[in-house]
Image 1 (spheres, rainbow, N blue to C red):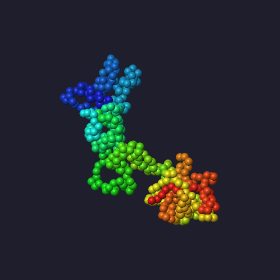
Image 2 (spheres, rainbow, N blue to C red):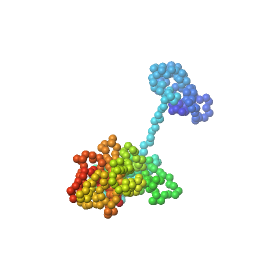
Image 3 (cartoon, rainbow, N blue to C red):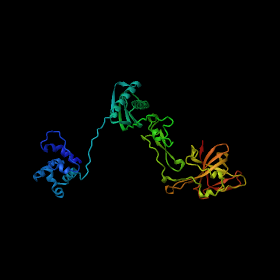
Image 4 (cartoon, rainbow, N blue to C red):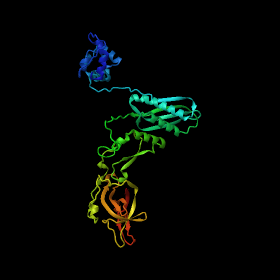
Length: 436
């Protein structure tokens, strides 16, 4: 039947009330939307009513469901209660009914008693392999892998020692699991001999399977997606990577092994996050959201009228330019001091050709920019910067910016000349990175 209540009634009462059935195991099928007709000739007990309701209906002369359905629901609810009307509505499909299911719980605990107390490493390693084989055999039926397990080491004269082992991705590889258990055992300082080992699985996850293609990609292209970018999703699902992370976490600790994830933030120093490797799987970063900030590759209106060389204004960084961002960032950015020749002053519209940094004067050979980076005003204090790419006379390349958020002259720094005889108020310059 198309409802749970009607199917239960037919399965339990249709055969005994069917006319001359030769097959005692015959099936009874109710047509769609015909539950009322299929149940009409069955006793009221086919509606899963309580014995009190059935006895009350029998005293009223109601033996079949068709008699019960001919009565008004309001009167039934008043005299017999709402539960009776609820069963009728469930059988006819007027209300939805959930199915209660019982899930079988696997016993994911295993233990081994030693024949005699021992501290021999080869014996302990062998018993750990046996424990691993026991729990993985039970999980293999459910197609699930281990994500976290606990090891209890019982000793003769001292309290038991416990160790928790977490995995980066679900696995049932017994060699890898036993290796992690052996590593956890070796890190424990056992004060007496071992009498028993107990292993329990606390967390499991579905095993991931991937159909192998006929022509496997080469090693160089396996980690690159169709756009030419690094496929982090494929890299993090590599079993070798998972085993490496598990081994490092077992030796160094969970918090010592982290991964770097891109964060689409306009500020360069906030464009990534360090996260622990406790998450079983990494997702591919989504596209940048405009709500995090605005990046403009066009020069600001104020800088378009400056007296910067035309070469600097015509070489704005492109999105696909490999040299658009440096590989080394200073955190925090370091202040640098622009210098001007003796007897001259540097206006805010001019680009300095010399900088003082760490007691040394650096001469600028070429520069490109500006590139404006600013944050959204509703997300806190406004940050506005003009970034420039510099090439010094010795070939070193810098990534510097001018902080445009300092509007108060009292907060701005004075830029001295080389002979300290002249100065001019200008927004501070900061060195943010180096190009390799």
